[in-house]
Image 1 (cartoon, rainbow, N blue to C red):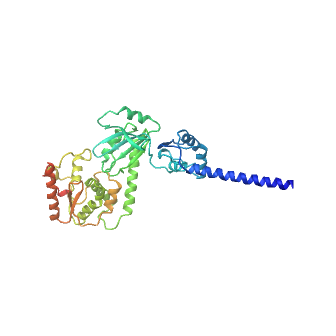
Image 2: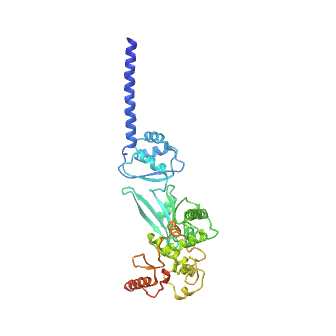
Image 3: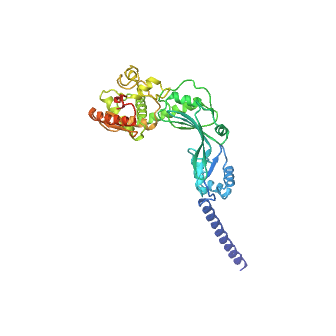
Length: 394
């Protein structure tokens, strides 16, 4: 009888313990996956080589999670404890521990914190400082300057020294290789000499994460590798029947498409015009190639082309030469390369500006002349010169 009571009491105690454990597990799961304690967006910064224990303590200290232990246990359970990715990640208000684990182990571009960005643009290169407003969860510009003509603000110099600040180089589509090298040389947070300006078209416009003291040449090499990979992928996926004998010719066409339109949706149509001209034995007659022959990609031509320039016999004057120019005239982005290798199926052989930022396309010279007349009217209304040739614009 005594042993039966002991067994009964033990069984009862075991059941109570199991219920307590189940309740604890249920609570822990709810705590891990339920809304977090922070009422505002949090910028979670993961240092290189940081341990899960250090990160969990950091998150608890800044109020992003309610328990460092539960955060570590949950990450272990998700088998994510060894997947921490260096960077700064914005997590929304009331984010759960589960969501935070997902954010800091998925990787990708940093989404919050202080960042200094070198922007190499077609018309200007700037360095700007941005920081996240935690109340709105949005980046705000704090300072900006042109490194070629202005002194760096103290705020930017101080930000460059911060160990947790992100440094980026953002290269716009359509810039020349010379512009990129000049921009990199203007960035004090980069180091090293550039031996030679890379071949035109060989650098991929994109945003690149760098570290203070990164070598300029190493960054150029990465841009070149990325562009080569993009071109190879697009070339391998191209349809048959295009008038290119090599990927290099497709890259030349992509650079022309890039410079001819600022409207992304137009790229396939613009590419179709030039492909149709090549196939019909027409000259390309495009102003951006002539401009490149005048400037060698070293400046922006803030004026219309002169008649003498349009008549000059240069390798880049597509009013005078047949086929493509000898090299690209800028560094095209992936979208322009894709358009050059996947042009729209059209009968267009002409285009001209339509006044909206885009172009009016035409199949015949009669249609084109009508479009040109409308464009001349728009120029006159704007008080702009109306004697610049437009045949090369399509």
